[in-house]
Image 1 (cartoon, rainbow, N blue to C red):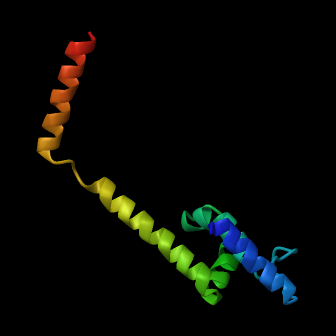
Image 2 (cartoon, helix red, strand yellow):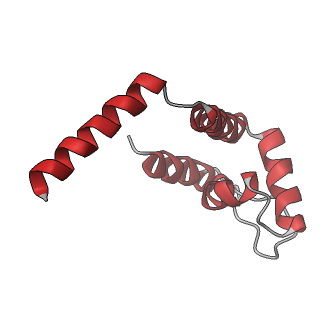
Amino acid sequence: MSSEGMWTRLEDRFQRAGLNLDSEDGTGECSCSELAENLFEFLDHQIPRELERRLERHIAGCADCQDRAEAEEHVRTILKSSCAQSAPATLRVRIAQQIAVYKRVTY
C-alpha cells in the first residue's frame, strides 16, 4: 500500500470516530496529512515557525509520524555520508580510460 493510501485510510478512521484531524484556524493541532505535506520543508526548517511548532507537537504525540520523520532523517544522514566519501583512485582511472576510448571512437 502506498504511503498516500495509508494516510487516507488513517484520516478516514479518525473522521469516522468523530475526530477532526485538520486545524482550520491554523492555531490548533495539525493532522498526519498536514505533516506528510510539509515533512521535507519541516526537516529543512523552511516553514513558518508557528507551523513548525505545530508539527513538532504533532510528531511528539503521534508514533507513526515520529517514525516517518525519523526514517526520513535517517535517509538524509545516509545520503550525506555517501556524498562525502571520495571515489577510489582505481575507479577514477577506469573512468578516465573509458572516456579516452569513447573520445577515440566517436571523434
